[in-house]
Image (cartoon, rainbow, N blue to C red):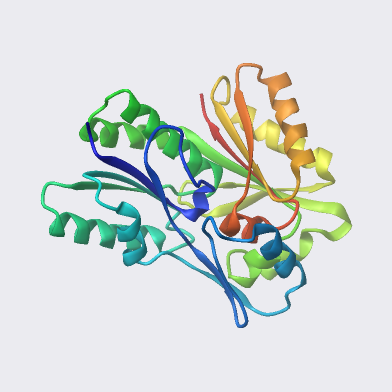
Length: 278
């Protein structure tokens, strides 16, 4: 039996998979007085509440190579998924870990994917690798297939606040000030180069959800999977799920929550949507 493991950093919003061994390399969210490690022990509600009140500067820290190596364990085949290199050094650290691991363990192999995304799009990537491994596909077959698959996945998001994005230099302060004013929400996507790009400024949740649905349909969603991840906004996720199922009845939609890293950036009310363009 093959000794495989799927590994992702904590931006994937995953703690386990159904059939494949899985481990997380946690990111950290840091202020001068607190450090939150994005793993299974994180008090997620407490972290969200803390940052809703926090006036201190904050930043995030990616897993280092040692964190990735710990997640690899003793697997002979490792499939490693990192948050977009356009926003984090996680992918580069994973590549360093791959080099160390393969050097120290001749014959073992590590495949590292730069997701060019975050959140539920990484969930889709992990699930696809799990599916292929369960089918008995070889390491080389999986590595050959995944670049084509990731060309056919995408990420759309709705944010009520961009405070933490602006604090980390991810968006301009001018754009951040727009969000939340007079009920304006920012709808955007993960761009081809892995940066998060605002596309629409929508007044109110209804218009925001309609904007997301329009984007999904325009970008090829027909019968593929859709993974919704919310930050303390299950009603919006349920509403969007219903809208998608009505307009694209063959789509396979499920709802989850954003964990630490994604909740920090999405903030309360935020919604991330990973989807297959198929």
